[in-house]
Image (cartoon, rainbow, N blue to C red; front, side, top):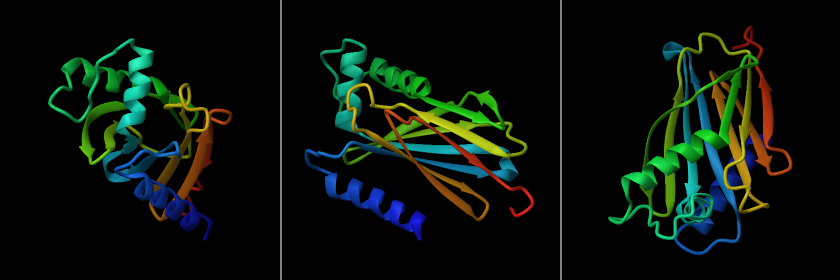
Length: 172
């Protein structure tokens, strides 16, 4: 029931704030372990205006219009660089490097796709997500994790940017 409430609230927040200025600062990251492919497949969703604000300040870019014809290759490179710096993952206690696969836009949301390969077994996963927290102290980065039939969620904040999930391989 708790997972359902978290999922519902995160969905509701994204829907209520789509297409207009928003007071809520939230991102969602979906992580799924695909045993057959031995990979973690990751989708991160951020509001375009929030990521633009952060990238402009961080990289001293006065001009940036993501999701438009004015978006440059440099802008796309900065998105990739920022995401890979701000999302850190440990699998079974060891740091892993996500591979950035690309991005797409959906109305006012940036969907970024990443993958961690060569994950032959999953006992623990530690995720640190500090996206947007340097600009928006009230930012919440919600992580939804799926492994077989197990679903877990974490809410990460500026003051609590890390979360650890442990899995009982016998029950999965």
